[in-house]
Amino acid sequence: MRRGRVVALGADLAVAAAELSADSGLPFADSVILATARAEDATLWTQDADFEGMEGVEYRRRR
Image (cartoon, rainbow, N blue to C red; front, side, top):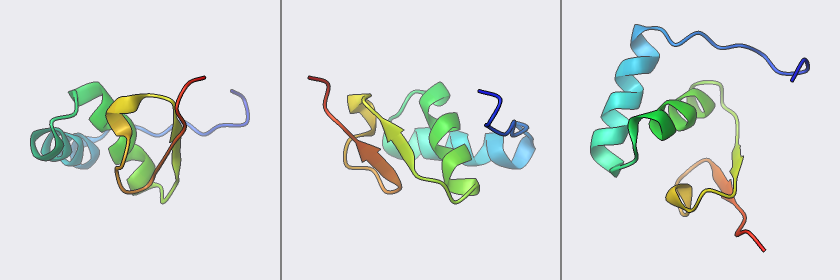
């Protein structure tokens, strides 16, 4: 975790997450994660099926 970077959840990011949640049906906490990845131009790697098929996400099914 020390290699990572802390990103503040400011007003702009919170609004983007809320809009993403409303548009996609994702829970707000998941939307914060995805909105942060998008704002940072990062790819979100996950095994959470809620993100499957979303832009900017690399989903890998659990084995």
